[in-house]
Amino acid sequence: MATANIAVIGGDGIGPEVIEQAIRVTDAALKRQGASFTWNRLPWGSAFYKQTGKILPDDGWDLLKKHDAILFGAVGSADVPDTVTVHGLLLPMRRRFDLYVNLRPAFLFDGVQSPLRDKAPGSIDMLVYRENTEGEYAPTGGRLYTGTPNEIAVQTAVFTRKGCERILRAAFEAARKRPRRKLTSITKSNAQVHTLGLWDDVYHAVRTEYADVQSNSLLVDAAAMDFVRKPEVFDVVVASNLVGDILTDLSAIITGSVGLGASANINPERAFPSMFEPLHGSAPDIAGKGIANPLAAVLSAKLMLDHLGHEKSAASLQAAVARVLKEAKVRTPDLGGTATTTQMGDAVLAVLAS
Ligand code: NAD
Ligand code: IPM
Ligand code: MN
Image 1: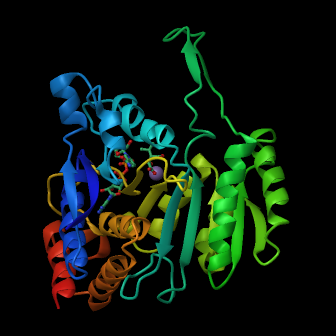
Image 2 (image 1 turned 135 degrees about the vertical axis):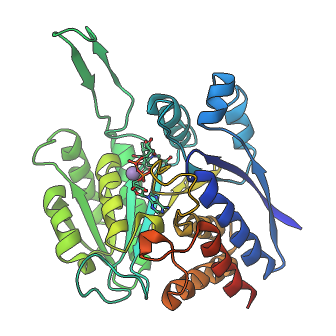
């Protein structure tokens, strides 16, 4: 019996390639528990835009809302501007559905080589909580006198006390449940004194309620250095929208590849469907070659299983990925191998079937 109805937006480039593997392996993980999902594939993205002049249909948001969750690949292509794709679909989705928690785990799997020297399996193990609905990504601003020597561009970051507080609380709650009970808030309040000053004030207020969590605050330039110098010190990390975006490509690559970077865009109140997507983009440089690593999408589907209460299936999917990476027989080129996207999916499926 189907237990959840999932909207699937493969999108552009490698998005559909990696999402199809995520669906295959999620089906297999669910089947082991006697469960299944319904997948509603929606053809939205650059090709849809070129055919219809719209990135999603007029009733698209209402349609999405009827689902239990959204599995998303990526959008972005050379022939359609990001103002259409990213700003017409991805970022509005995060705001409309109030997906204010962007959770991005980074874990160094056994069998995967970090570009950092001498890092033991599991020594990098962080959960990044990225604010996902406001901050530097607020679409407030504009351009004046376009194309003239007097051109002006203004973009105003929007930070609210409520917005800072709810992401900081979500991160502290997560830290409280982890064995190390550590949290690092990362800002740049020495430069952005108003917006990130508010963030820091809220951080200091919230941390007083979490005496059981060992917390500290870092400036992002120094934090970026420490992600490379001593990533093992980080447990839960919490940051604003832009700071969290930049740090999570970094947290992904130090665990071997952006092709392993999962993310969950969550509305904790469950007023809207949450959305799950790899943190990488449409990778136009490798799109259509069948060599993208599907494991970021697979691990995003694992986060979706957890969110929807299918913890056993989630755990078996995670274990299957860990086994494939540890065995190191099948791996895509980003991990130093020659396997295709489908072969990587096959390898995970084989473990789930065993
Ligand atoms: P990207 O993440 O698409 O690619 C960066 C590099 O990582 C490329 O070399 C790519 O080949 C590699 N890479 C990414 N995913 C991989 C995978 N699964 N396996 C192996 N290698 C992988 O970033 P970009 O090139 O800056 O962006 C391309 C387009 O994607 C842009 O239009 C951008 O706006 C968009 N984008 C969309 C999303 C999203 O929809 N969630 C996220 C990031 C970027
Ligand atoms: C991500 C992406 C997006 C972001 C882009 C496409 C706007 O980089 O999901 O990390 O910055 O949020
Ligand atoms: Mn990003």
